[in-house]
Image (cartoon, rainbow, N blue to C red):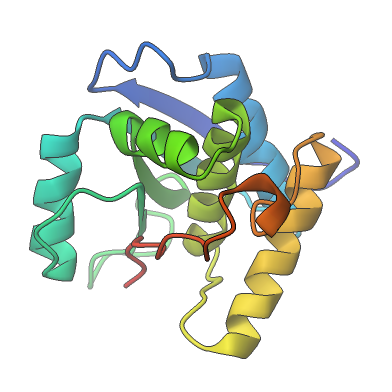
Length: 175
């Protein structure tokens, strides 16, 4: 794709997720987000889960005992292993179908648009982007808006696509 390296994507279904996009769309969104960030070589696992699993992960890794929409876990090479000991791994993204569905309803957003946003958001976290301070948030949100726009989705932060309230707190994990 335009000479920009894209990751391989593995989709894991740990939930029925009847309203989730199909694997082809999920993979397209992962790759597109990676391209928007300049590209990446390696494997990304996208795991679709139920509320119980994401709540456990959120509690264990973020000390927040509640389900959330997306968590990102960048791969860290174990100490002592040579760099070429394993295939290039980017990391894992975990998305909760039920939370994404609920948020899309509450924020009056098209479900596919919200899914694409959560996938894009998770990929950007894997690639080192964050929104802890305002300057970093502006960079990350600008990339998200551009990437989603290129896919034909509206600006996820625009008040015109929700109920006029500020976006829900993003609760993803980025160590």
